[in-house]
Image 1: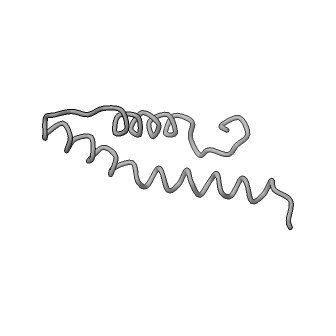
Image 2: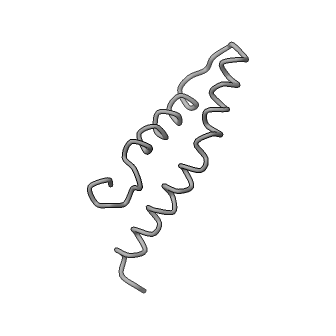
Length: 66
């Protein structure tokens, strides 16, 4: 998607994926670690929204009109 120009940043997308995986596949019993994971996810929201807008814009440009 980066080579196609659909992402604003491949590096940020990689960080979003890593954060998602940490939330989805890590089950820490330590409440401080749980809170840190949730806070890290919350901090990625602006980048996640920017990535969503960029991909949506790319698809709108590439898909034929109905």
